[in-house]
Image (cartoon, rainbow, N blue to C red; front, side, top):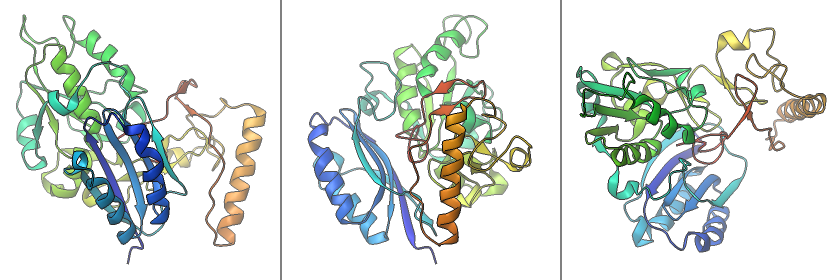
Length: 338
């Protein structure tokens, strides 16, 4: 039986006193033995936590005791191994970084579409389907017919929208009429922000998948699914498939790209040190540090002890350039991403 419960959560809501919530929330999580990352900003809360079922539900109840967070939604998954080593509660400018001032997803997000209704929507020929996740996520799985914006960070999406809204672009539509657009992401948070942004750009019919890919994979039978591949997740599971079963990927501990069987079989892959995406991008000192970290990981495994590890280097893109980590807080946790 699983020993740990993981809960992914977010809510866009006005929290002007968010900085004052950091310390008491961190103290409560520590008292419950809960690990993970939570981000607080004026626009709301985002993160993933894990621990005992009692501890995780106690933290959720503590958050919902604030009337502003009474409607906080979360998604649960079980784990045999605790997927986080520390508890971090951080104040941020945004709970997911788009870099567009003045957006209010709590009021202006697009229309929610439940997973059971998603197939019918994206099967309609006049709907433009957009995957708002980053390149390393789209690479391992997506919906049939979805457009990949090829973004390395979520904050690149507005520039992509501006380009594709020009004549001949994927979002150009016909004449002055904007097309209908359906957007999706891992858990829903980036969709709320991206659809709110599209509405500021004159897109009136904008939809997003309620609960994100994870809710779709959890609730839609595989035989009815329009999804192919695995879904990247921001914890030690790395990826999941239909029914939220474990996927087929592991994380490169150097650049944090998800690696499938082909990449792991590559001669450029060295566990904990390099992979085909980051080979040749690290200095000799960085490689030595990664090699020592991997040695400590293997020693801890032999002793049946958890390895907390050192701070990992920044994510490196396939082109070898540094990029912001992912969907809510860090690739190993929530964001850097969703």
